[in-house]
Length: 83
Image (tube, rainbow, N blue to C red):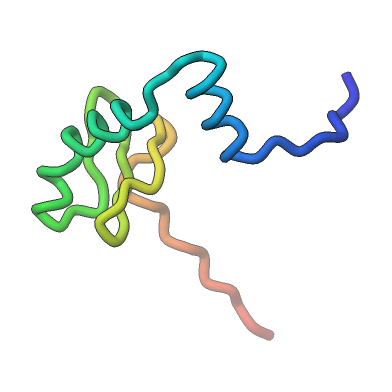
């Protein structure tokens, strides 16, 4: 299958979900906020809920990933050796 010519923005996807799929985005925002608010209040940078890692930065939820993909402990970067 060929790559589509048209780029679909996140804004367009959200509007599609709201208007075509009749998904209540604001209700989702409230539910997500209720789930992560305790971690935000505690100053956490992430919280694990039901096998998902909710990443927080600057008082905002910035992403959600499966726990298997993100162990909350990053591998140390390899030191680059200069000749």
